[in-house]
Length: 106
Image (tube, rainbow, N blue to C red; front, side, top):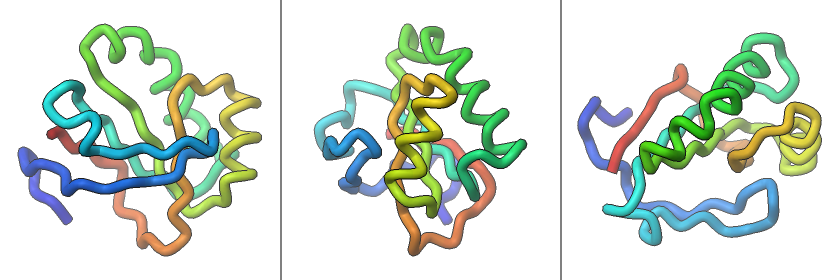
């Protein structure tokens, strides 16, 4: 686990939209809010995602990008994002042992 203030390692991830996210493309241009959650459509995870959604414009004004990560499949993420009108991408990572939600900067 990274310590607070540590730069995020460069990574690439396929988004629920089918696009490829490359951290190297964003470095020194944006702040990254990378949050981990256990499962789409659960009460707490839905509340968390909707809180990011509700503050998305404010975060965008601060040049922040939100990226949610869970072990769910991309199809679940697509439905979750559509149903809750999420304006930010989700990443499927079924191999990760998820820590509590955490933010990283770069």
